[in-house]
Image (cartoon, rainbow, N blue to C red):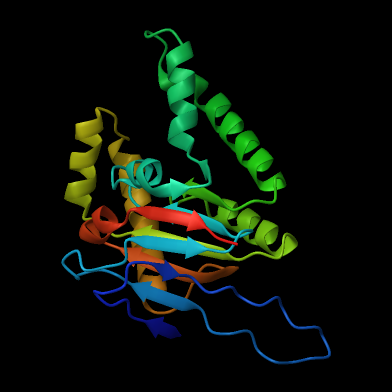
Length: 222
């Protein structure tokens, strides 16, 4: 694993482009994945994360960890957040109608919007709840198709903080769903910190709350 460090003086951090897979006759191995751990820096972390123009970025973490807030505040470019889709549907539906009844339609609308964004060929930041591994597989295939790179941003927020975030926004998930998210998120965090990234991911950035609050811009350059 190629683990690098971001220093306090770094105002922007450019994530590397992963070269395309070599031709069958050239047996050179692909570069090792890059993991940048920005936790425990007391806010002395990059103010910007910069990616290539055709790259895809997945932001994952526990429900209530601040993924949507981070995306709204920092993303310069394409942004697909399932929370935005839910909010649009909530505004149209009668107040007495439980969300569970129209949740499948919200998910279909979210993935349809994601598909449209991917077809544009431009860089996109995608909200991922951490339990939908097939979505990351889809994005990895799309990144290869467009000759871009798939990157992972992982918010490492304590469960108590995530639950407090749910209470603050006035919307949460069931205890069972939260435990499922927590298990999947813990497994992913352990794998990433050990240098094992999800299939197709070229790099990962691990953020704690302080690093997320310090971040001001996620952008696509070129």
